[in-house]
Image (cartoon, rainbow, N blue to C red):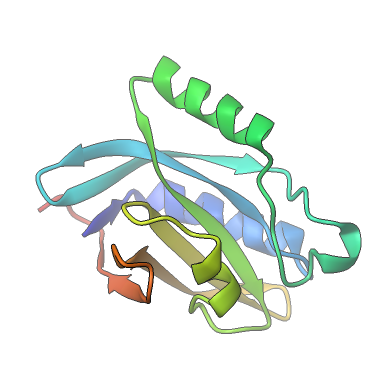
Length: 142
């Protein structure tokens, strides 16, 4: 389960709308307590994908990932996942998303339709990497 602070959800939705018609991306920083990942902060990251591909792909460079890890550590948090938007597409992971994901992390996807953030979902990649499993998003820590 993923606990997502309302202010973090708002940031993700806003980033998706600002990036439209391209994909936004960023990291989820937080803690893990029992079976719950608690998102305490988000960090937007510049989509480093080629300009011609940003409408349906995102890329986080190793340098940006390292900087995000360092920022999380300074806050006493861990990188527990990632977020990105799907412009004019459902908030469901694509085969491309699955091929570039790792187990354990949460993957939030926000659908942005005609510039307006709509459905927001979270997913976790199965250990065998065969499929994304839906992850429940909670507004209250369980």
